[in-house]
Length: 264
Ligand code: T3D
Image (cartoon, rainbow, N blue to C red):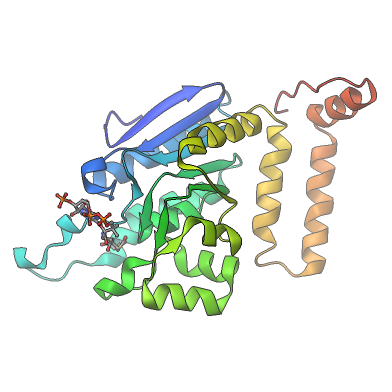
């Protein structure tokens, strides 16, 4: 586990809360923060006592993407190979987020720009404070969308809106993002953390085996055709149907009581 302060890590009631913590730089990514975030996610993936992740940012912003202080051309030398950063820092984390069979709830507490916006969109359920904005800032500095943004925006919004957001870098308000289906919902600023925490706790204490399979199933629908997808539903339902949680869920329903899920 990382001992960096760039991401604070708090475990409570089966939720691992990861808070990006470089507020004076709007939580922009340096190497330290990359590795700390990855270590937190790996802990959540591997620890059976953790059922869900809550990702948020410290201070007034969620994340402003890459720390551009580390990219100053005035320092001289050859141009950096940004492909290396993506390959070694961003992409492994994004793959981990998508592959871990536990839900990641994101509470976007303020501006989310560049890779910061797209890390949020790679989470499973995104809530944002009404004052938050999403900015595909890349085109302002001559880059292309990364951190999965070209995929997420296109899948969530379609080409028309994806292209306009990426080409113009216009800020998108949280409420519009919710209206467009880019995120789950926009909530009052002072309610954001309570609502996101309650949601993460509910998921973490739910039938986590089935929830993990559901995450995989929905993700597979982005590339599968209908036939392949209903075959996958059959396979995953077979697995879910053998779980203790399924037996408990049905028993609890029949006994008119709340279920006690164990994630098995
Ligand atoms: O490089 C690679 O490895 C490839 C990967 C690239 C991925 C990317 O994410 S590229 C895109 C990088 N991000 C940006 O271009 C966004 C830059 N930031 C902004 O445009 C604005 O800061 C915001 C629109 C996000 C917020 O604006 P505002 O007015 O609310 O805040 P501010 O005053 O601009 O920022 C507050 C402080 O945070 C300020 O520091 P100071 O002056 O108080 O000492 C500012 O410099 C700092 N800050 C904000 N974003 C970054 C940053 N410092 C370093 N890197 C940042 N990205």
